[in-house]
Length: 110
Length: 115
Image (cartoon, rainbow over all chains, first blue to last red; front, top):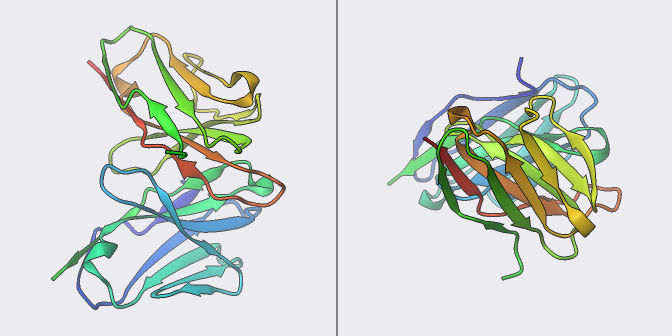
């Protein structure tokens, strides 16, 4: 089993749609969780951290369920510029390294 | 540009040759990471340094791979006797660690093609 697993994708949605990505992780000792965004042929960039109480940043909402070892990302009112690959990322104890999921590709069309 | 820089951007080599990549992190960052990414996959952890000390190396990493970070500044990743399976994007990232998480800042990567 992979340490971090994500929805296979791709997700093809119209502008304005709401889309949700799911992610599960295997290491129950994991301490920190993140969503990164990666545009085609570009490097990954931090989108947002994921906190236990859930957190929101504009149109983006992240949720964490430690009991189920599950992370989600909700994007509301999708924009064309949201088209990218979204990487679920888990940090182990001590923040020593980040483990990336395979990513879920999102394509927003007019 | 004060971001993470990697050199070269692209490298084409023949199987069996050695290659070396360089990474210059953001100057005040004490942690430096190497990741490898293939098409359709997320970045795969290879190794990381805190200052000049290499603190962790992936169990998946062949002994053909070696990384250094002399003086805790730039880092090099060397692959000896390259194989076609080594073809990938090699990403370097840096961060500042003070006990809590600090986001990784990635470089543009070095794309390796082994023919």
